[in-house]
Figure 1 (cartoon, rainbow, N blue to C red):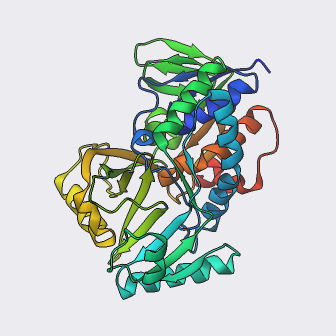
Figure 2 (cartoon, rainbow, N blue to C red):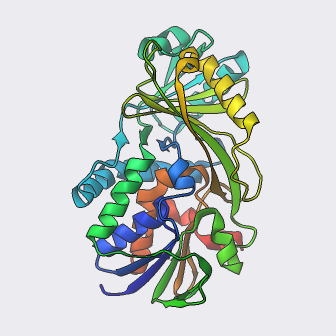
Figure 3 (tube, rainbow, N blue to C red):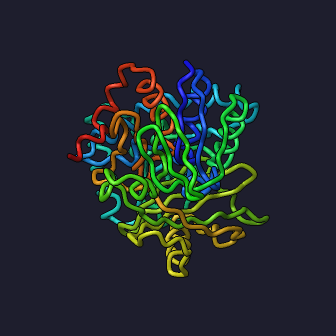
Length: 366
């Protein structure tokens, strides 16, 4: 296969596509002024389709579960080709609640997941603290979902960059101005020709092709990165997804006793300022779940723009001949990277795609 492919976007989706396509023999260039930045850099890295499941979003769960099944092999192959650890963490996920309404919501989620045949275990607060001693007395109950995993997004991005380099991917450090079938117009006025263009520019994708106007929007999210300090209880070994009086929050462990705390969610256009109220709310809610977090060092605050879609499914498929889209992954870009790269590779090779991805066809919006 010697088909020339230009991938617009160098986040986890674009880099995963570029790596897999180049490894399959395509000639690949990636257009991005700062690959590995944006929402991919500030992501929590949760691989948690089950604990994010919601009635009415069965297609979202099916696609997420299909990608999660691919993650272990995907990570092993990435490590072999990149020569570095992509940061997959397999300890599982706890979903916990504070008040009665939170616990009732989790009970409904458990009932729903059980009806779908998903593995989930309801636990008391005491049982949860037996698994994770850093959880505080305000946590009264929750769920253990051993199949939901996580990955260190920054290790993952570094591994993707290394795998792309090992397979001959060329990087064009210029912003795209418009994507067209078989060509990309760049901000500097030049044009890149290709046989296929893959639009994977996250929240900016709708700005680069008129067919996506109104279908993909930026959804702002703030995260905090913290570090354990001597004298405080260590961070949890599992991802903790909490609900504090209806407010969602997550705590994702990182190597060397680090912790990622997120995430706020705003409809704020392309604003990426971290606001004081968001930091305050994240810390207050996290402290209810894990009191010792007040003794941690706050080492970073950041905001990213999730690429939201109209139904929380990505747009994944042909926009027109010569132009593929792989965008609109919302909170699930890291989770969906393996299945997205596989689907794009199958489309490039004129193969049938996995059934779970058919609901994400961009034609559903017409």
